Amino acid sequence: MENPKFVDIDGIRTRYFEEGEGEPLVLFHGGNFGDSDNVDLANNWDRNWPWFAKSFHVYAPDKLGQGFTELPKTDDEYTMASVILHAYRFIQKMGLKKVHLVGHSRGGYLVTRLTLEHPELVSTVVIVDSSTTAPGENPGSQNERAKGRRAKLLADAPKPLLSKESIRWVTEAFSYSGEHVTDDWVDIRHQVGMLPKTVEAVGKMSKLFSTVLLPHLAQQKEETLRWIQEGRLKTPTLLAWGQNDPSGVISGGLALFDLLSASTERAQMHIFNQAGHYCYREHPKDFAQVVTSFIQGGSRS
Amino acid sequence: MTSFTEINLASTEFETKRGEVSVKNEKFTDVDGIRTRYFDEGAGEEMVLFHGGNFGQQDNVDCAENWDLNWDSFAESFHVYAIDKIGQGFTDNPKGDDYTIQAVVRHAFGFINAMGLKKVHLVGHSRGGYLVTRLTLEHPELVSTVVIVDSSTTAPGVNKYRAKLLGNAPRPLLTKESIKWVTEQFSSTYGHITESWLQVRERVAKLPKNSEGVAKMAVLDKELFLPSLLKQKDETLDWIKGGRFKTPTLLIWGYNDPSAVIAGGIELFNLVASSVPRSQFHILNKSGHYSYREHPEDFVRVVADFIQGGRD
Image (cartoon, rainbow over all chains, first blue to last red; front, top):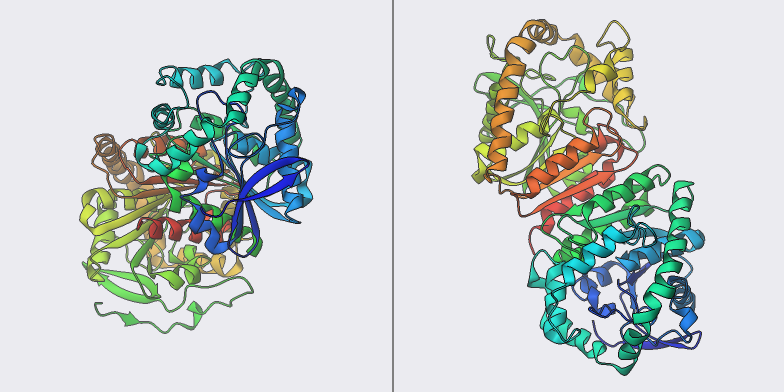
């Protein structure tokens, strides 16, 4: 991925990449602003990028407050709703009228919610290893299992956190094989980890995570799942999941598929063996092909 | 390729409706004394498709035409073969009383040899999914990739659903009406149940050799076939658990399959994933037992992606 661009989204300087020609496809990475132990950004998609750019006009932004995109302006805006609004405005700013969406982990929740709020905008949606979206993993009262699992997984992360060594360790803990954890990817994430704005966000989130982000997310997620249950998600939906994801576990993915399948006519799920949380990086070409086929199969029929 | 006889039967030329393709140009070959019907088309790496069911089914008919909705798409990328399994379709019955799973697997292997194929991609549905699994375990050097579709025969445990599902099939069985009803029970959507597919299955059902197969199996199913299958299946699953299975494997399943239920597919995938490094599982919503017919284009693309993706 080369030549990052910047665009102003409601006063938020936002970094993104774009390449290729064809129908627009927008990729949303996982995590959120102020993660204390990990960094996610548009470069997460670097192993899929050339494959997607062959068939689509593909976009990948750094989500609000992540990567090289600016932080939310006020403490009240450290919410998933702000993240989703920022994503929506990004799509509008790019002038896109109809998009294919792919979202990983927290980004999977983002694309699900965006699709429910703006169904007219979305042709197909792909949700990848997202316990944030899966039922029974509610970050409100039912969050203990999911939170506990992630916390346990990363408890022994080498200190200081967000050093290159620590980021590598954390990513390997999320993975089936560490092969996809390239030096380039670790370097740029460490670089983001050292930005003053990242340090600021980590500081803010040490408080706002449990007072603002999680309560808002829990409430909104309950509504999101209810909407799905009520049959509001009609958009063709693909779930892609790593069989060995130690965090967004496969049982959650299957439960999400159970929920979707009742009302989403065109719903499919693809499970990759020997793949952890970053399944799109562990099987980059297979991932891109499965997504491409799902999208193209849908527009053809 | 070995010699075959091209049969000129006007009745094999089914009308082709819009959006429907048909398996054209049937051929016959001798496989260890069993006259075997098959089709082949296209150029490229060889792929062999095995339909489900078995000889002498009293309530249903499966044959190579099961793949007619996938055929042209597969032929664009592969040299694709589809046979009538031993005793099914227009292929001869087993000799004597050899109504065993061993005879089915041996015949499929014999066919691949008769065609002179050295390395194949296998796709098998239902009982055919078991066949390709076993064939791959017995002859790993022959198989590049294997695709198992809606196969409770392969999944751990026994199928508790099929008998109940088809209990009220219209009598007499094996009429076009009854076959249609049975196929609908298996399905989530009905668009794939085409007139031409029903016609060829009815023709098979009326063949004297089919009636003979049904009569044989009325006795041999419980006495010989099922015991042979269950015993061998135990061994097959033990082999997989023991890590003998290394061939890249794709499972494809209809989420709404009322016979080979999705829970069995998940269980099978967990087992396969524990020993097969390159293994993937694709689930299709709004799809019953004949998932490859209910979503023919998606099915072909998922299979082709899997086969071609192994290369990077």
